[in-house]
Image (cartoon, one colour):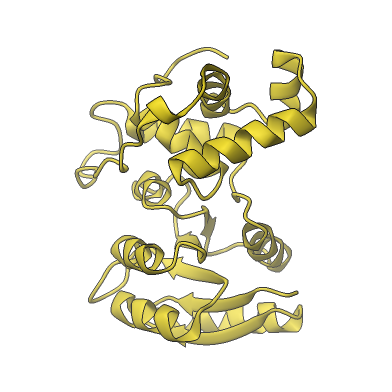
Length: 227
């Protein structure tokens, strides 16, 4: 089943271009909005599977809009849109529960593939890329000069995890894939996937990107830790 998408961006050319690309590839665009408040209202009404959300929008920025949308319906996947790679808000977006981010000059093929990927419940960013982002912005004083003060992610209680699950979460935080986890821990990949699913359930995580953020925010992994 093809994902149903809502596009939220204050630039009409971006919205039009994305709509044309997605619809040409069999992905339904439910609507377009130009600010964060409209995005929250449209998400509640239209119930999209994926929201393409600009970070900087009038009335309500994309980060706060994402928080409100996910608080109302955690099943929605949000891809943040940004103009610059390693935008100072990218870490905030992941901490808010976004499943990843896209540059606005993304190729048509990558846009379509990204929407389909996050719709499956996966994160857009490779764990190693997410790790580098978190190490940049989670460290004390991290982030570019002049960036806004970070709002930490909601801290999860890791006491709910078994020792093995804590170990796996820590390794996920360092960027290891399921295959790499299986090799490191001498487990089958199926067993690793089961552990990962349990971690997601116990900590109310949406995807791997958020798991990496939580691993750092809770101090389970520190920036600069070696694999």
